[in-house]
Every structure is written in structure tokens, then in C-alpha cells.
Length: 233
Image (tube, rainbow, N blue to C red; front, side):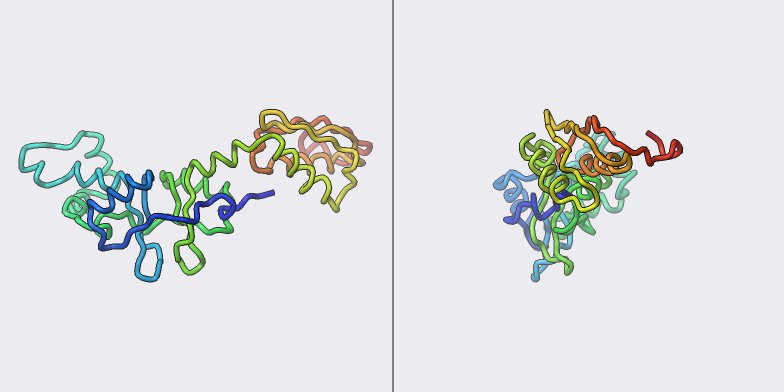
């Protein structure tokens, strides 16, 4: 039920090493139409990430502009003041290689991490892509927001099939043979009868956690009321 990063990640990943020049990094981003690339060492370990923002920050804070009387936009200056600080800004302004420009440590994820957790990482760190590494930190792939959106935009038929096969037919804790499943625009409707109300609640929660499910309409009936009022509806 819980799709993993390995199920949606891109295995063929563009990467650079620490000595890759500024211009070459920019060309890699353009050629592969990506917003960021991992920086790896000689053994493939991810040591950082260079993004479009990192390259543009260098242009915003180049010392030559200051000598010419240029000042970056207020928003850019505030971002630096709140983020890395003036010292780090000047350091990046002088950077000419990926190692000097990259953001480090890199925010990475594992192939066995759930896509939900990966989405939370992206939101928490404000990034659009996460390098996928093994337990030794070696690059295996990359997952992007676009990859996550593909999970959320699953076809209704795929969702219905997964609910029936993985939840209904493989259930060992209750007889769900009388449950019917229908899906429309990502909303799952459950109908049928169960022995106990608690079984209906567990089933509904399991379906809610299926990838691509937007919501669940519970039209289940039960014979035995075994949920106390203090446990909620």
C-alpha cells in the first residue's frame, strides 16, 4: 500500500563532482532540464547539491557588482542575512567550482523511504528534488516533486485495483468479502456489511493511506457496535 521512493525515482541521474566548473554545472542543468544536481566524490557518495538558486546567488552577490555600485535586490539580501549570512554569501560569490557553490550537507532520502516521507522532507527543507542514496551514502537515483505528483494523480482503476487486491482480498483480520469498492476522481466509496464497527473503522483508515486516495466515503454497515462513544465517530 505504501509506495516507496524506489518505485518512482529516476535511476539515471545527472551529477557533477566537486571540481566541476561553474559554467559546466550550468550546462548540465540546462542540458538535462533539471533544477539541481548532486555533487559526488570519487566513490559516488553524495557530498552536496548544486541548484539553480546556488548559481544565481553567485551572480547576485558577485563582488564586482559591489565595486560598480550595484546592490542585489532587498529580498535577496534579506534571504542571505537570515540564511547563510554575509560570510557565506561572499564565499559563494568567489566560488568557481561545484564544491565551492554547493549546498551542504545534502538533503537525501533512502530508496525504502515512503513517498509521503519524501514529500515531507521536500516541504521541510524547501527543495524540489532529493538525491536517493543507499545506506553508505552512494547515489542511486533522484526523486522530484513531479515524481510525487504522479503518485497523487493515479488513475481511479489503479487505486481500485490496489484497494481490492492489497486490502480487501488479502485481509486476515476480518471477513471483507461483502465489501464493494468504487473510485471516482481519487475518492473511494466503500459499501457493504461487516461484523463489527471497529472493523469498518480500520478498513477505512487503511484505504485512506493508499497512495493516490484523496478521500474515503464510508457507507459500510455493521452488526455489532463495539466502539465506545469516547473513541469518536
